[in-house]
Amino acid sequence: MVIMAENDAWIRLVTPDLAAPSLGDNTADVDRLVKGLKQRLGGRGVWVDFSLVKRLSRDLRAHDYCVEGAVYRDGDGWRLIDVFDGKEPKGVHGLSLDLGSSTLVLRLVDLTRGETLDEISFNNPQIEIGADILTRIHFAGREGGLVKLQTLVLDEINRKIGNLVEENGITRKSIVGMTVAGNTTMTHLFLGLDPHWICREPYIPVVNRPDTVNAREVGLEINPEAPVLVFPNVGSYFGGDLISGILASKMTEREDVSFLVDVGTNAEVVIGNRDWLMACAGAAGPALEGGVADMGMMAAPGVIDSVMIDPDTVAFTIGTIPSRDGSAATEGRGPLGICGSGLIDLVSQLFLAGMIDLRGKFVRDRCGERLTERDGIRYLIVVPAEASGTGNPLTLSQIDIDGLIRSKAAMYTILTTIAKTVSIPFEDIGRFFVAGTFGSYINPSSAINIGMIPDLPLSTYVSLGNTSLAGATMALLGVDAQKSLFHIRDQITYLELNVNQAFMNLFSAAKFLPHTDRSLFPSVKIWDGAVPAGEKIGV
Image 1 (cartoon, rainbow, N blue to C red):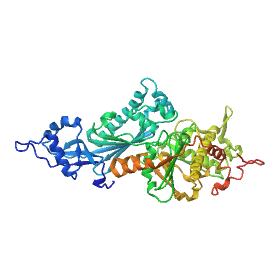
Image 2 (cartoon, helix red, strand yellow; image 1 turned 90 degrees about the vertical axis):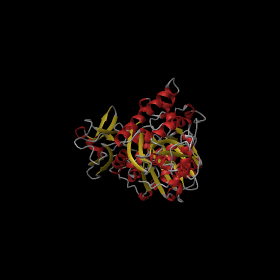
Image 3 (cartoon, rainbow, N blue to C red; image 1 turned 90 degrees about the horizontal axis):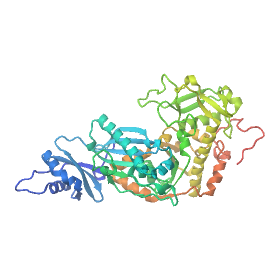
Image 4 (cartoon, one colour; image 1 turned 180 degrees about the horizontal axis):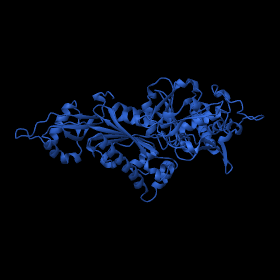
């Protein structure tokens, strides 16, 4: 439960003291309601949209003028959302949405108590058009393409809202506010805005700071007058989901310098403190989500998220993500695949056990019978068919490892480049926040072992989970959080990596395990046979 101050609430439920009209008091219905609300709101202005004006007389009389008014902060005043029965108050609710390109997460919140009631995660149906953002942008340019993309995501959101309403015994009408955090393209598609120029020079969105709209305008099946706040973005490649993450991490309240890393479709990085922020993004994300491997999957119950290999016996101990109730999701059946954090664990353990060398190549003598070859490509059997939940062996190919090494090199190079740009050595970083589903499961030791993140004390690393959703919930509940949101947006300096020559030089040096410069990773214990006899590792 969140303890909310009334003076900070974005949405409030107010009970005005109303008397029924009479010959001695013939004040108009809307004027009567506005006067009663203003008295409860400290005399601040209250505005009523015409769509509500047309039905307020009927609604007030239906409840014998005993009503609760849901209002939301609009500048220095308040705007009426709706009125509810004051004789049997049932409270009002809000939704916060993490609008991901692969996965959406919808949270139902009791706005009176600031308490999360329920949460649901589901695949983005736009994946059927294309798994990547560029494909969707190009599809939006076809006749009817933009409408189809918007309809796909809104229809699925509305279905899930229906599920939340039914399971929690509330009404759609009682949902009187919503906040949405997503990347720039996703928010454009959500609002039905043409994303054409996001991926074309000079890379300009339609809008960076969308105005608050109501649910009816967007097509959301909640209270039609509910305000919908879509988070602002900095530009084409730095969206509201990252601004939400910065808000949730509270790194702008710290004096020491922090990193925030969110790995999703892209790897997005922010460095800074309460005085300044610099950000950049790079294409390391999909591989680290699990997309790099044939057996790769999004993090879900039954998916491998941890691996240990005994260096003496090379025996594997495999852990999977449990079901929501905490039970083993693979009980009675084996693992289904591997997520990004599990893949990092696996490659880290293969490296420490000497089953792959500094270049990420399989060492045949150490891999033994687990190593097979098909069509000239080497595969390591991680889970044999008889122990797999799919009935097929779960294997890791040499191509999979090469892809992960490129991704981890990109991640480390992004971090190195942005740190060098602001002249902050890694050892001066106070906190290293890791966000997203990836951050919820990642083992920092494994990521250090393969050279994906700096070799810092493990206490430096803090997993924050879904910061996009957390920040969206903060903004749903509080005006101060919304003000911070826009302050953060205006504070960010964006570093463009596509034209950064130093980035490419650093990237080449990072394509080994853990790195060509061993001094950068003093804690990593290299297997004696990692470097083949007579060979030197160089860029």
